Image 1 (cartoon, rainbow, N blue to C red):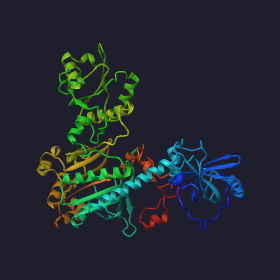
Image 2 (image 1 turned 120 degrees about the vertical axis):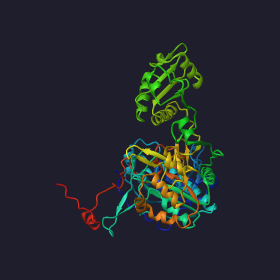
Image 3 (image 1 turned 90 degrees about the vertical axis):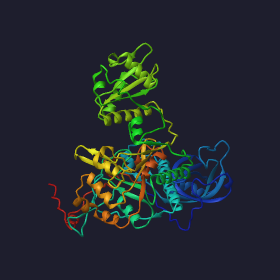
Image 4 (image 1 turned 45 degrees about the vertical axis):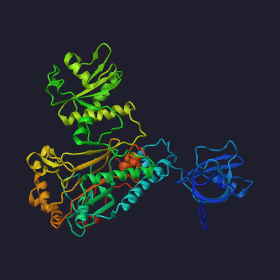
Length: 596
């Protein structure tokens, strides 16, 4: 632990440059820099400090020949001490320049300085290459954010947020706010609830999205709305999910699906160009939901690499391999030149697909003189010839098969496709590849609830003529819905909304929501739709997930200033925490018994 030092007042000193600003053209200029000690090197007569702020680093030099007192005092300096220095910009000596730093040609010769604050020895080095557990980083998040990569992530987040706003402002949108304290509604993840002191026994809910309110803006005539909004969902977490997150939310009146998609596409291209100076494809490719599931197995495909799934059900329909012959769907995935995989590798992949409900993983190695596989003996010559033609098999390939119900087959092979691409480095990480997914099912069956539920949300409009289909054949009903995916992640999703009270009531009926319950839960929306609601549609983008992809971060926590852990807790503030019995009584809640 570093000793606490007596600090100097800042006084009338003012910073003239940040720590990544000075260049060779500034030689002989006087400057005042302020920041943190990154590194300290004592070379006998001279003391070198790398001074850091959020912009970068500048080397400063304490020379006893310039100011003996300033040099003598500099011996106390340690990592993360906070300094203000006044000095003169000099060129570094030949052979001492650092091409890896923007300020690497110069250094600042210190004439006087102030110690603004001392610091304890930090629990980990303030560097990008830091070997420390994530829990320690999150406990000391304010120190973690000093690391250059974390700082860069937040700067990119800021630039992206500003470019969203710049684009939408020029497109005639209004930035409007919606309530944080609202009412709980069904159809979605669990709500976070807030008890009301004024109305004991009643609760507010934190919004999962501003869905209903943005529709009310359209009814109100605010025909182009956007908001950079905090949303809350009480759901299980993963690397790309947090209990509170930021959404770029848009809603437009008097538009159709195509107009929304085109505007959103232009907006995302604008954000990437302004933030990363990266040009995205124009136009973005499109896949229907049916095509995405057929070829990639998932509805958020990563299309930066090949490896498509192939339906071989008809080829093996009469196979002697009983599983193939009896399954509703059989699909194959070819890994070119993958026959060198060891049995241990295959066993690992078999365990991997079990995550998605598979019982195992069938495979065949295509060798020069044989098909090596436990199932090869069950395949006839006709079936082998059919597989060779359908899959374009070549010597040295390996084929993986999955058979069973469609949802399991597609999920298992679709995620295996991603696992193989990562293991064999088939993905160009420098590429950003967006793709639209359209024509989603309107409804999906919930086997636990034994009813149909909305695939997106219950305010999504059915496609033309599918208002009848959703009642008569709900499995075949399609939605006017669209998702934008990027590098295997869904970054945005939206739909054309139902703007007729009558059609909205029909949707509630298709979802098994009784009229009285619909009025109780959504009466304010149904009432609003009766007062001349315009046709409207929208889309929302997950800002955190988008920034995670743009910065090529491993976790969404790396791009959120103060994130929660996988268990939805904050290690820095120790939230969630208990509250006093006095507070509970004021809220009309049961007082906890003392722990004995």
